[in-house]
Length: 484
Image (cartoon, rainbow, N blue to C red):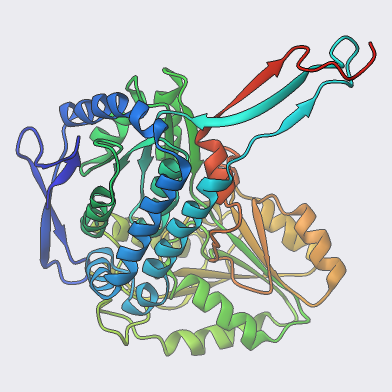
């Protein structure tokens, strides 16, 4: 499949390609161009030329285009599920139950919100000398937005960035994940055929160190919207600062779950197994990663987790019976394998799992995990679950906050005061109560603190405003009503 630059489906300028493989068996699914710096420059130049035409498109027309794309996604749902399942590594169960449908909902949501991006009217009679004056604010497009999309939920996360950027009247250049761009390229045809101005939407395939790095540094791009690792987020921030681009970063997480002694151990165990092992094969920024359990029920939760994990089907992600599929790449599997080995060498006890075959790692359950253990210090992007006892809720909150990350957290308890205190004290962007943390709803603001992000939130209206310029207009002596 080719990439889209300036309204044309093209190969890379030097003819280089990437091979896209099934993460489980290595079979070749297709090829995509490996874009060069020259390709990026061409796309940016085209977007800069197209941004005035996109800005002139009225909100109702932007909404119509997005509605059309959402309808096309729904109409081609089964084909898109099969395509994404094959290239991405998430299980058929998960993709069939969520991602493609979520993308259609997200795009439809931005279609509606495109018609509601309203400013304010501000009377100025509170200030002496401006009694008969008036001001208003209006949101206008930024110009060119670059969207850098990760592998784990590529279609869903991309939909926030692309549909949000277009809904706000911008041109958008997408850098697709190198491991799994095929479904995004297919959906890009729907955008192109829906009637966007030439070069309003472009999609590049290629290596992050080439495409992403160039988009971050080049003049002409007004904003970078990145979902990815903290390491990459820092590199993008440094590069973007040279041209004073806006930067929206949704980065890594090491999300904590607190399980208090008044909850059913089986219900808690079911939630953390689902939130750690069967959601994205553990490769989600907001998945369950550190679990702190009241010592009065710790062993009961551990026993239930082991029983539930033994019942999981591990293997080929394209088999509808599979619960846990492979990691996205050999490099990803190497990293998780290293972290498992480090955890054991640091004194943690591996109760089950942690066995690697190619890119597959069987779900690993740990106990006896010290506070300075790798599993609690680093983000582990794979099916690894540390279960740590605590004595008091204050201790649990302190353990949860003892992290460089601050994306989401969860607490399980029926104690209302404990819930309210924890939600105020936890240093995260979102707290989920009595449900696992691997939860993101498009109608809610999403983002994190510390090394999980730069404080910006992604969501319908949050994204529209973030991808817009706010302009203030002042009318001096617009009327003659007040006595001055």
